[in-house]
Image (cartoon, rainbow, N blue to C red; front, side):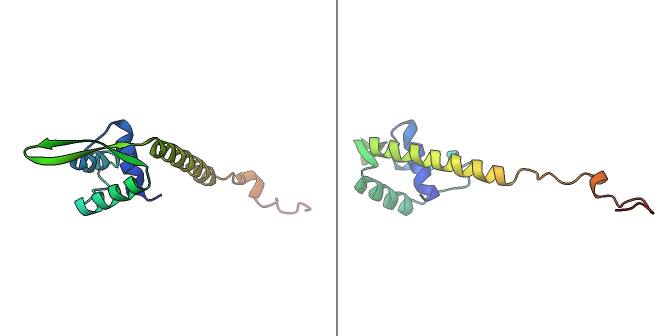
Length: 118
């Protein structure tokens, strides 16, 4: 799953949101690393709607403009949960691989004293 998709689903896990609120929440969740553009956001929302991962909870009219409020659908929650578990397992494997390796102690690698038989 691509990071923007994951972040959109995570943004909707907390509460239903409209487009601009999703842009702000994704930016906050990613600590400022991801800033969705409007075109990218709505393309992703359309795809997630088609896949049944999100739904339109309601529509509101604010300042004369229709605004859709999106919510995480049950299948979206399941996908988000599975992706979080996959990432936890991946992170554990990476952390395990970068643990400091045991190195031989200085005594174990020092040369034999002169004249000692090996």
